[in-house]
Image 1 (cartoon, rainbow, N blue to C red):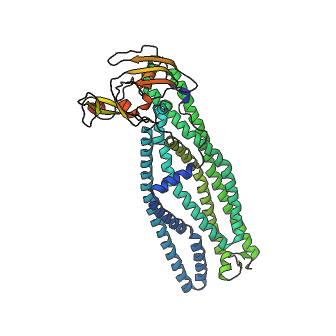
Image 2: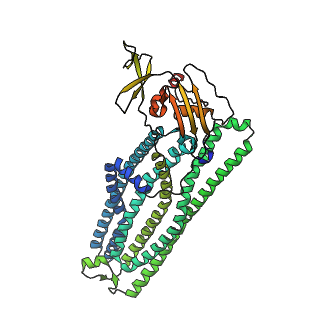
Image 3: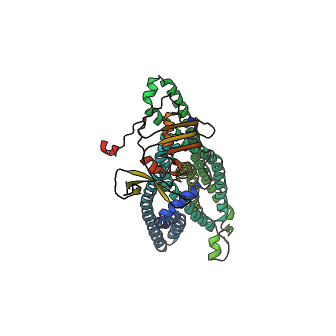
Length: 506
């Protein structure tokens, strides 16, 4: 038959549309708003309780110093600090356990609903869509693209939110201890963000290409497996291998480029964090020597406790600051690393939204197929019982009347033009007919248009010009479901669905 052009299959957009992540989060919130509120509360508790260690460490060091002078008073303070730390970390563990369990259910529930939406939408799409997209590429929506969404919802989003909260708490703690040391940390963060922008931007575009290459590869494999007999009959193995190598090479190149950038990012950020730690220790030690017990340290907390923004920089402050700096740089690295996961998820979500946004098959027909019987005057009338007589119920919009036409199977094509794509007409000025009870055979070479004509009668495709009449009625006026219910068709390809032979026949 004259099929659609291969070049049309699986042609992707060049980049993920803007607002993809926002749309995804909006859908997630609309389905699981209450659960996500609980998750948000637990995330805040978990992040805050896990990031206040610097405060406890400072207080603990100060109490230990006091214990060296007054053991009784200092020891009591040490026990209190340890008890508070234990309570805080217990809250951290409990909150983390709760939100991870909820997110597991939310993630799988959301993916289940997304798969249902995709499958339900797929049932409304015209045959043209499946003829212009490889089956393997469509299957990739349900596997690879759904899997990257799972990673985004279950891992990336919680980790990103936790990191942002932790960064906020740690930053607030640092500026409350020492503005001078905070400036050193901000210098290191600036370097991290600069590197992330350079490297992360490169990985994002290749992750998008990689996700689409996977769909192309799966589509090619699916087609090759379905047509393996044809490949062998025509000794096409070498050409098939060459085509596969080309698709596989494209996937390899995109995956290599994406992971090359992604795998480079974390080691660089970790080393910047280590350099920041050393620099901070050096600056902290230098400030301790330079200040020499003088109130030259700038501290926000001192402003609230003593009314003055200056206080004495102490060793416990520097030590706890080193721990917070390591934690801060680690969270910045964590946020930067999530860029790769977000890029992959955007690619997957964009592909999923592509199929969800496809225009469904349009049906403007209003003529329906009904059970009919003859009244005492010999006129066709509609009835509720199955009589074995079928008629077309044709409402006339002009005068509001309804006429019934007996289903006989009279098919007429009048000067029909058709092309799978508008710029390439494959059938031109075709006129033919098949009267009720008449047997008609289409004979011709492959690609002559034999199956195409049967597709037009079933309205799998709409014609460009001309008319197709069924029992004298333009098939454009007949509802597609009723039109196809009135016809019997045996396709060239045999498709058996899961179940018994009887279930397949029904």
